[in-house]
Length: 165
Image (cartoon, rainbow, N blue to C red; front, side):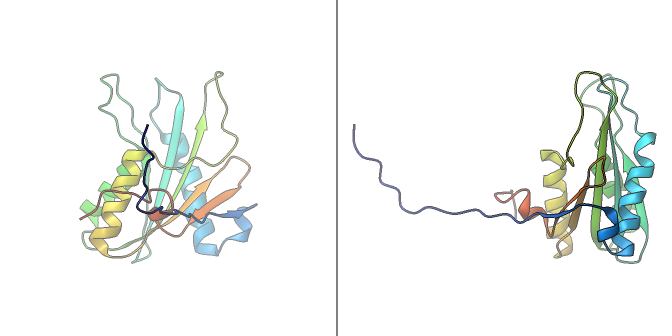
């Protein structure tokens, strides 16, 4: 076999800040995370028993919440993040999304969630598109059950090789 020649190697580094408590965040960031946790129980997840809550902070100070909404005709449902983002885009066109907070819980006896949960691939791509659309990063907060928070400054940290323009 011939030797494989590599033209170059790309190192991809991501940065995730970890906070042990919501109290380590600014008051606005803490409120955003609390709103995501409060809306969590409104999720409609009768099939997966995996509930997700999201809250967006808009540039005008509005906080928009969303939950996942399942449907037996899978994949007709939608994720909490996209529910909130699409609502914000419709009701507040042209207003920049500054941050998003996401939290989840499982009501299934099959598994438990011990760490903060990140947005799924489809939601990551939607967040990426909105970052491109508004030409500004969206800070991402992922909240665990014990209030551990993972924070990224941009979707680039979760989706470094995204589709883009």
